[in-house]
Amino acid sequence: MNQHETTTPAADAAPDQAVPTAVSGNRIASLDFIRGIAVMGILAANIVSFGQPFAAYMYPDAFLTGHSAAEESMWIAQFVLIDGKMRGLFTLLFGAGLYLFMERAWARGEGRLLQARRLFWLLLFGLVHFYLIWRGDILIFYAVFGFIALACIRWAAKTQLVVGLVGYALGILLVGSFALSPYLIAETSFGDQPDFSETREQFAADKASTLAAGETEYRIITEGSYLEYVQYNLTEHAADPLFGLFLFAFESIPLMLIGMALYRWGFFSGGLDSRKMLRWGIAGIVLGSLFTLLVALWVKGTGFSYWSTLAAFMSVSLLPRLPVVLGLAAVLAVIGQGASGWLAERISAAGRAAFTNYLGTSIVMLVLFHGWGVGLYGALGRTELYLVTLAAWALMLTWSKPWLERFRFGPLEWLWRCLTYLRCSLSDDEGVDSENDSH
Image 1 (cartoon, helix red, strand yellow):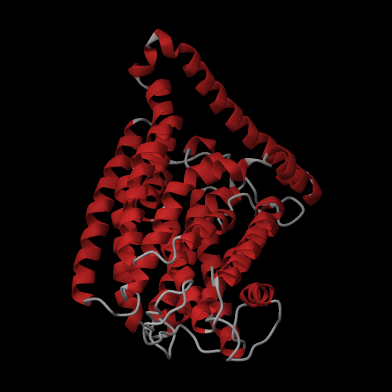
Image 2 (cartoon, rainbow, N blue to C red; image 1 turned 180 degrees about the horizontal axis):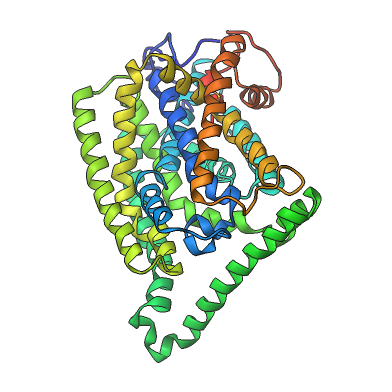
């Protein structure tokens, strides 16, 4: 099976086909490299939710170990540099991968049914991940939104880009206002109006309920069995993915469409001027990060209050996040095209096995933190959790390259591929680019 390929445009493409845009021959190195950076970075974002209650991801006072002044600075650094950005990179790449997969499928006479089957299996992987391993799953959303993006795959690249940008802007207005209003009512003088008294009380009750749920989960994870943990997820959090669909739709679907358009224009394969990409990419990173830093300092000024931290993550940071995500993608795409050496090769290998690394990390953390395993849940502060992240990064970089030197796919990439094609083979002439069997 050849890797990431492009064929000559076909004027007589079938009605369900789009004109291929990739170039036949080699993998697009930048996609592997960016995906490797993203899968490592997303662990740095998620590590708090692995080792502490979910509320601690945004709200430092939810840490069971306390949160020092130095760790508040770490919160700011993570908020500015990592939170939302790694997920954004993943989502851009997922959109690019959707189009790449269909490009190769069309070249083989396949239609969108193959991609739909692939997304169906991704949804099942996500459900298993969410209910049986860890509730921070993103695969469910990628699968569901992937079906929507698949319906748009034959749009012109310019249309995909414009709709993506407009959709993201609508998300800022809809989701952003939804997430900002609790802060305004619960923690500012705006909520002192008599009309908001009941709403303010409800928000206070919601906060107390969330923190109490963290204490309940602590007891289940540290003292209960694995089956009790699964039962808790299936009963108390059964509907959580539905709410998540609302929260992430106006981020994920637009970024998928943007990723498709960028891929088709050669953004990831050297088809655009690299100097301009670097210049605009760095500008997006710097300007977006500076704005995000101002948001973080505002949160610090509130004393890292509950509703201000939620507003920062889910509302105020949405606008500056986009230029940072696109800027990172541009800079990493340029770097990744020529990246070589020991570290770059291992990062790219981790990206080729991103699906295995993403789910495998969750399994490792399940064993590391649960009471029936090593039992570190609630025992490590932010500093120690970052050390766990470094160890996990080392594990990713250690195993991925030797494995891929011997086998063509990561273990879960291979399984996903087998389920997609309803057969298992390692031959080079069967199926679509293995690039797309990555997360």
